[in-house]
Length: 120
Image (cartoon, rainbow, N blue to C red; front, side, top):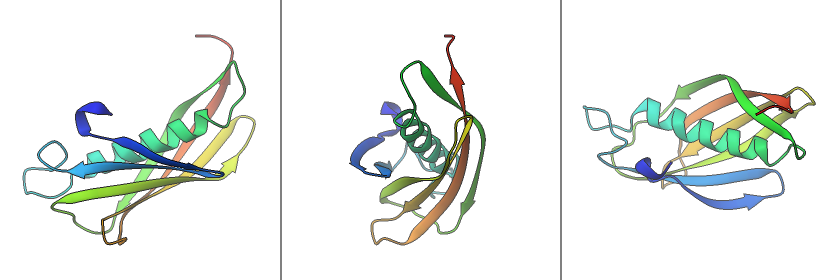
């Protein structure tokens, strides 16, 4: 998180939000926000939010993520918000919406995590 400048900014009753700068660390060679950086933001948000929803002694691990990149961003900051679609005993599914500074949808992602009990 730190090398890419991701910062958690808000926590609500059913959502978690973070920002990420669009700069030399997160742009691809053509000057646009790298899709991989968007996915990294999405997985960071979804995995962190998932961990807030499990009991002590449980942990979450990602098992699938997808992303649709909808708008190019060249500069500024993007904001991601994770909200649960499903909070089950064995799996959770999270939707992460990433928007530019004008509130336009840049990327929408869905993360599925497995809920594990015990162990290291």
